Image (tube, rainbow, N blue to C red; front, side, top):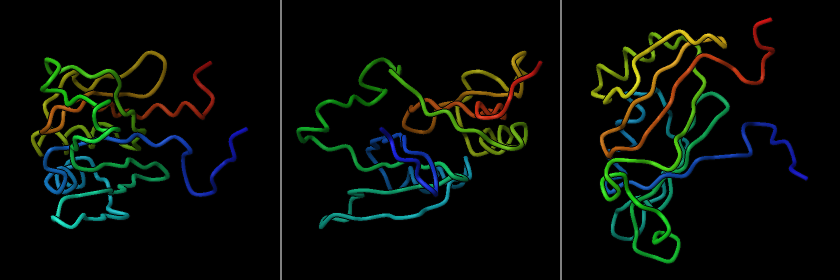
Length: 144
């Protein structure tokens, strides 16, 4: 049985980037993530990083050709597609959309109000990873 974590989610997406240092800077600028930890390997690459947004987190590191890394494909290796995407709940979705777009996010689905509540949009980051941002909070009661 899962143990609730007092500080955040027990499910944390993990991504790989070819230039993890640049990705970290961009994710903080464009999406508002904050660096919690960045651990470099002996060659200066990002071995492991933790970025937070509210009570959520993503972990990331450099693309590596190791046993675990062989299970992960980068979007440009599979026609720009993803098999999953991180979904991030934001307070002011329209403002977040504008900030991401101004920072160069490639918008996939434009900002729109959703009939089930809230608003949302999706975009690609500079290395092609798909992100969804929305104001709908699935932990709160929905519309009647």
